[in-house]
Structure formats: structure tokens, C-alpha cells
Amino acid sequence: DTGVSQNPRHKITKRGQNVTFRCDPISEHNRLYWYRQTLGQGPEFLTYFQNEAQLEKSRLLSDRFSAERPKGSFSTLEIQRTEQGDSAMYLCASSLGGFGTDTQYFGPGTRLTVL
Amino acid sequence: EDQVTQSPEALRLQEGESSSLNCSYTVSGLRGLFWYRQDPGKGPEFLFTLYSAGEEKEKERLKATLTKKESFLHITAPKPEDSATYLCAVHPRGGYNKLIFGAGTRLAVHP
Image 1 (tube, rainbow over the protein chains, first blue to last red):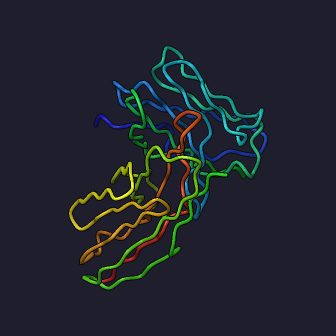
Image 2 (cartoon, rainbow over the protein chains, first blue to last red; image 1 turned 60 degrees about the horizontal axis):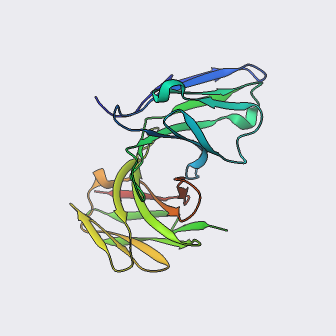
């Protein structure tokens, strides 16, 4: 399978704990995105990387959230001191890049439940 | 503010009963409009990209069209396996490459 992969697929944690999610993009894609999706809503943009550079961050990404993409390959999203409101599906997407708009391909997501 | 509104929120069809889903958008400038399909518990699956008013794209029983203010996803003679949530997203001009999604239309096709 050469699509976007995410791990873990499910995470249950207690309030106040830290969690980290991993995303492996499609191998030749240099753009990587994180989105968050709650029940009954569409995905909301969190952050965007071009290669290893984090070029855009949403206001949704509070100080408790941090994302990295070392060496421009896989990416991690860490949430510190989790809150119940952080419960959601966290989606990663990647795209090839180039001029103009390009298609974002999504992974299966990581479902986070904060108790 | 850039915004995407999809209607209806939910749609129930009998197998073979054709219908259309609507996506209305307000953006400062449109670089592209995307349709995705999402099955429960899974990530969105890409269907179409439309770039300019008047453009149409087809794939099996699905046809997407675009005007200056909205897009339609036409479903012809749907089958139960077409049941899913259909998401519309816009890529506005300016900024980088974030997509702005609507809340989706939940489609259920019954035999």
C-alpha cells in the first residue's frame, strides 16, 4: 500500500496526558497537512509543511499542540496536557507540490478519545 | 471570510433514484474546488477537482459541476455502495494550501 499511513489508528488517554501521532506521507510528496475532524463536521486545517518547513499554522493550533517534520519525511503531531475537547479524528494528508493547487490525499486518521 | 455550505445535511435515496448534492462557497478567489467521499471511521477519499466555472467531471455514477458560486455533485442511479458522506472543499487564493471544508452531506442509498 503506497498511500498515506497514520499511527496509531486509535488512542484513548486520560485528561492531562501527552499524546503523539505519526504520519507517513506518500513517498514522493513534499507537502504534508494536518487536519482535525469532529463528529458531523468537515475536517479543519491545523498546519502545513513544505518539506521540513512548517509554513502555516491555524489559530486552532494552541500552545499545547506542536507538529514536526524532520528531514521532510514523516511528521508527528503532539498534544500536551490533553483536554476532553481534544477528542476528535486527526487526519494527515499529503500532496505532490508544484505550481497552483494540487490534490491532497488523506490517511485513515487517528481517533483520539480523552477521558 | 471564506466559507463552504453543503446541503442537504442528509439525504436518503432508493436505489436507482438520481439526485444532486449542493456545495455553496464564498471565497476571496478560488484556486480549486474538491469533492471527497468519506466512509465511517475512514479518511476522505479524493473524487474530483474543479478549477473554473463551467467545468464538469465524471466518474462512474458521479458527475461534478462548478459555477461561480456553487458546485453540484450529481448521482445517477445510485447503488447502496454509494452510501457515504460527501465532502466539498475549496482552496482559496492567497495563503498556502489549506482546504476549507463544508460539513458534508450524509447519503444513504437503500435497496
